[in-house]
Image 1 (cartoon, rainbow, N blue to C red):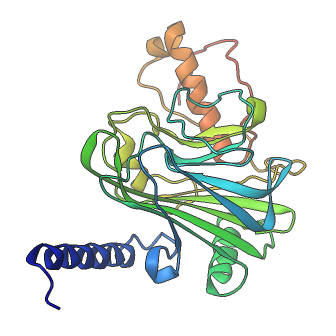
Image 2: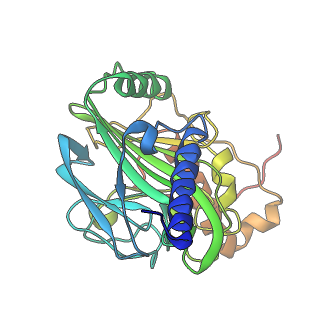
Image 3: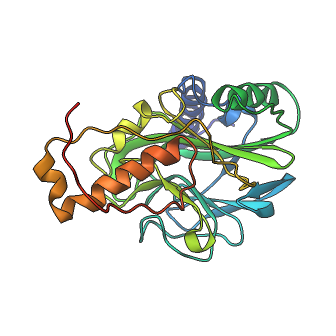
Length: 302
């Protein structure tokens, strides 16, 4: 039986679309872990911000003292553990809320226009070898062996109400018994006109981190060049919350440059300055719950 011209056209269009998506996964930034059809990922078919995918974890994941056996991959660019979330950003970290959140890029995402969200778990093979190597490179004071990995990828997704805004990012959860880590990997990121942020938050915000510049939609493109582990496009964190995990004895201070002494003395700028200092200290291992205050401003010469 001959196909109608319309049916033939639809089949051709679907074939081209599928091929295009496979090619996109193959040409992802080298910093990304394998994903999409080439990695055998499960695909989340999400419509705007209504969809979340529950994943029963093959291995427990410890996140700042809480042990989880499941997680939700939420359409809007974040993971939660106790319940799914269709929320886009309403508050910036710290939220002081009742949920642990991992947010590689939390914003209002609509994959009905373009893009795929996919995920895959691993308990053996080359991905565990790669995760082990990455963690030992980024955290050289540890002797770490990965025994479980979860990779969740938002591939060329669009922002809600803004067609053509292709944005790619990925979060990798890595566990080795009591030690837990997350990697946030960034490809091409479109300018965001909606609220956006990247980082993580915990119940009551006892620990949290905001990737610098990630809550500025006009600067969000810089994520693919930013890093805290000397690997452009990647942010890496230890997140199990073990005793003194974030204290490093070789940190004795931080050096920063301000444009002028008078700018710093103005009270409106002190908070911004302290936030930047805190971000620098947190990148190098001090707790994100650290509170800083400025008791005196004194001008010194080099």
